[in-house]
Image 1 (tube, rainbow, N blue to C red):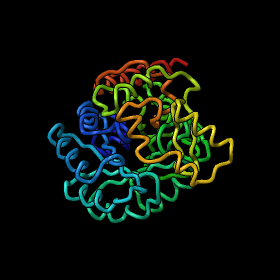
Image 2: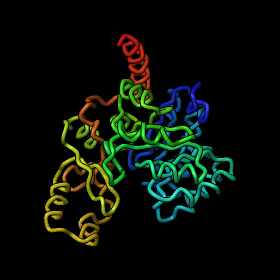
Image 3: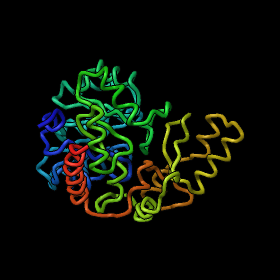
Length: 312
C-alpha cells in the first residue's frame, strides 16, 4: 500500500484522467475494475448526463471511482449537487480556485484532489485543504499551465514543498514512465492520452485513429489566453496559428474557437474543423485496446522497469 492506494482504496497507484468527451462510465468502470481509479469527465456533461453516467458506473463496478469537475464549468453547483446526492466519494477539481468548493465537499465526506501546473498552485491547493494534488506537466493534453514546465521538472519541485500525496501527470503512458515519475517523488500517476486510445473511451474512432497516427511534434500547446490546450495539428490548428500572426485580441480568439469545437473534433470525429486535444505522448501510442489490458500492460511494464532499474 502506498499513499495513493491507501487514499482511494485501490490496487494500483494509477488514475485515469477525467477527460472531456472520452471519460464516460464505460471507461471509468473498466479502469476501476482493473485495479486503477476510473474518473468520469464531467466537463463535457450536462448535469442530468453526469447523473446517468454515475448511476451506470455504479452498476458496472463495485470499486471506487471519481468525478473530475472543471471549476470553470458554468453550472458547477448543479454538478456538485448531483455528486453529493449520488454519494460519489472522490472528486478531482481542475481549472480554477480550489478554495471555492474544497471545504464544502470535504464536509460531505468527499476526498478532494486538485490538478495544478505549478509549485505555487500546488501549495495553494494544499492550503485550501485538498487531500492530494495532481501536478501536470505541459506535455499533457487538455487544460494546462501557461508556464510550459515539464513533468520531470515540475514533480521534484512540487515534492520539495508539498506535505500531502502527489500524483504526476503529463507525458506518462507506460509503466516505465510511471516508475520514472515515482522515482522523482510522485506517489502515483494520472494517465489521460493512453486511455483515449481504449475501446471504452467515448471519443470518436476517427479521433482515436488520429492519436495512433500522431508522431513527435504533431501537437502544440496553444490558446493560452483562453484556457491552454495541447492540440493535434489539423485545419483548425492552422487557422489558430494564422490568427496569432495578427496579434489577435482575446475576443478574436473566442470568435474563432466558437462553440462546441472540442465536441466536434473528439466526440463527433471532425478531424478538420474540430479541436483535437491530446498529450505529446500520443507519439508513443499505436494501439487501441481494452482499458483493462492497458492497466495490466502498464503495471507489468512498471514491475519490469523496477527490476531493470535495480541493475543500473
